Image (cartoon, rainbow, N blue to C red; front, side, top):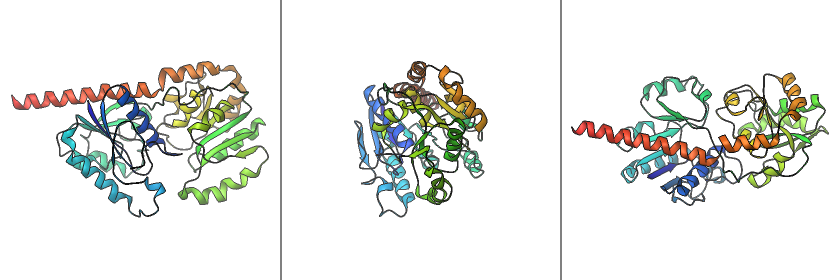
Length: 351
């Protein structure tokens, strides 16, 4: 198949450090190429891929301080893809709802994977107007606010099987990984570690939008002797960080659409203790790959039970459920189904 993957320009594909969506796009693109498909990636010019790269801007926008209106570049990207649509059998967007209007006015099958939250009131009019646009969810929980949209499938994320590995080390701390923001609740993670009398290591970035929250709410907590803040880390550091963790704490306070950090921990054999919000119960198998909890008290209780779980079993379930190859094969089946449906529709119209 001739497949176009259309990425946001905020980060390179893959990103240098933090950037969940762009990492998933990279893994999907590489697996599609490995499966023998002809893939074109529309992304920032500093992206690295074995597909054909079509640079839409020289650098990732997060690293380019000269760009003051990123929406102008995103709209240009969509227009360029639209003008080349006939070159592809299917176009796969990762740009939220931005492609809906223009791409609905052309014949090549397209779909959009929605990577973010959908529970905001302003989303409802958009998905009512574009109720026929094909979309993909990354968890069933993500669908709940807009159940009548044209959902084609749920395709959970996956990462390369050999990207992260369990390392032979003695777990000795609780871990928090990802981003420091009000909805991620690293303050809760610190509180849970204190209840258990265990140290906690925090590997996380702070976005500019969350700097005040970090300075006012989180920074004072980092001075505690049991807390070690190591900042943002890349994939090359995660195996060691997560293999050394007794458990990864995910005490979120929002409807998480997926939560990539949870399967990263599983890839390293580390159990996950996560609050029952959004996708958590779809990803964490309670009593197998971790524990799904309701509050800090039950989270602390889960930490005390973590020794009952097999880290080998955690890794095995990752391999069975959350690899990039499985993700790519899921998408290929969907692509073929959409292309065949389009051919059937055209034949019917011609008769």
